[in-house]
Each structure stands twice: as C-alpha cells, then as structure tokens.
Image (cartoon, rainbow, N blue to C red; front, side):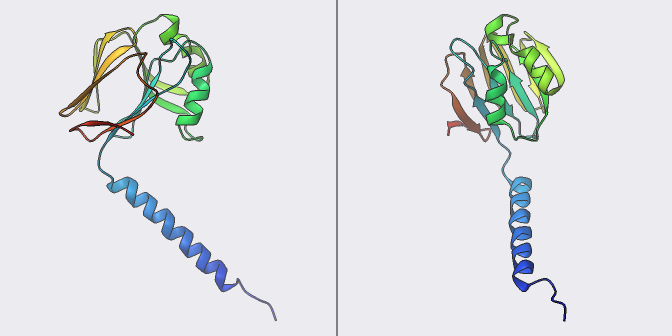
Amino acid sequence: MSRGVPTWAYVLLAAGLLIATIHVYQDLFAPLTLQITVLDVGEKSSATILRLPSRQVVLIDTGKDASILRALGTTLPEWQRSIDAVVLTSNKKPYAGGLTDVTARYRIRHIYASSTDLVFSGVVRLSIDSPGTYTLSYNKASVSFSSTSPHGEYVSDGQVFINK
C-alpha cells in the first residue's frame, strides 16, 4: 500500500501560504510613507537611499568609493539590481566617487547631476542646497540632511519625519 503526502505537510504548506498572503496584503494596504536611509559610506562621504511612496528607489550621492556597494547590499534586498534614479549633489569625489561602482552593479534608470530641485512621484521634492546638503519635502513634512547627518532610518507619513 502506498502512502500519500502526510497531513502535516499540507498543514505546513497552508500555514506558509497564509503567512505569505498576510505579508502581501500588509505591503499593499500599508500607509504610504517616505523611507530614508542615511548610509555609512565612510568619513566625509555622503549617500542616502529614498524609498518613495510609489515604491521607487532613489540614491542621493554615491560616496567616495566602492564602499557604497557594501552599504547598498545591507540596505536593499539581495534580489534588487535596479535603482530608479541616482542624484548627485556634486561631481566631486566625496559625493560621486562611487558612481562607477554603482552603475557596474545596478541598472540605473536616471542619473541627475547637481540639479537644484527635483520632484519624484509628484509628491516628494528634493532641493539641493549645496554639495552633500539637501532638503526633502513630502506633503506637509520637510527635513534637511547633510553629509554629517547621523546614519540611520527616517520615515515620513507626509505630516512629520521621525527617526526610527
């Protein structure tokens, strides 16, 4: 007599599918937020990842060398090999030195060099004040960052920015 698939395997499969479904629905119905990660790319160097409410990914500055790849590897999912936009606040090495390494590893849709104002997804405004210094505005919330800003994660719901 042959034995079929054990009942516990079906229960395990059903539990896995339920957990995956919950994660998908949480992503779909989560409040729209702007997520900002100030990366550690070395002293006197600058790089920041934005995850826009539209799920696009924007990299502001690339640091001075290939250390940006390590920072991106710990911030972005392992499977992600594209970045929607790279914005360089200056063409000097502390801000743009890692661009060659980033373009070799990731597919970049747009590169903006030293623009003064950019709007992403119609709701997130990036104003470049000076090299490595910029202001992000999302709806009513606004915050400034510089190359000396503390590394870490910040989130905005459009009303306020909070440091996670």
